Length: 287
Image (cartoon, rainbow, N blue to C red; front, side, top):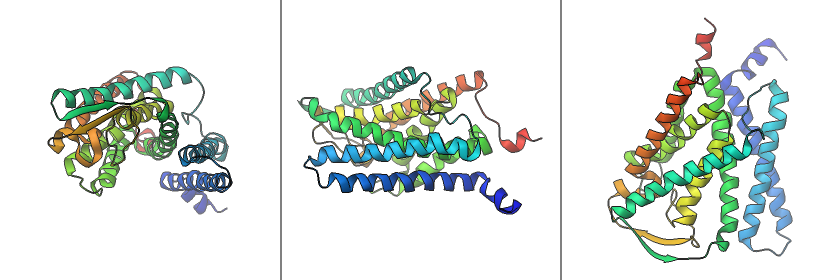
């Protein structure tokens, strides 16, 4: 391999592209293989999807934790078993607590009504599926895209880029407004990013993402980016301005969700700076 090609492949942008391609490509192949096998087995589709998704997640985790460290001799990938229970518990409590606070504000503001309470057991496949999807998403977004960008450009610029990317991705959704797109991006970039910076563990953003999504869709029957669970614990309805309901995005696109996530993220960044967890840009380190 020539020096020029080696230099190109080591560039942060190339690393992001290669890592995402490896994780997604091998993960999707594994998932498709699992679906082919499951196609010949008599199981409800509600069970087949979580199983196929689990295979996808296993392949992604395996590539991320086993291949990448040897591939570039990188350390600190943030997906170890150290303090796993503490990180998962803390992240779940934080994500569920913030989501519950958003719903409570909607309820007290009379934009959300509860019409029925259902049983929890039918939600178990969705519970696991949400955790699996959250794990895959955070490995790709925080573990690869954000972490490599942060190593290159520093924590502050990496957070700004992550926020801008999420706004662009969400502004194209049907019924989206600039306010709702920014609100959703506040959670995705300015809460999950700071949570990773403060703990340097991917399990924390995974747990927050999981608890946030499942609380809204599974427990409170709300929409998450247009997706709803028919068998949610509570049957709810909303009626009011998009600023409070979140419109198409559901409660996570509301102004109260944005405020709570921004406040929590700012607090995490404050403690991150206090504990010297903020990374400087690589070009400034070299000076």
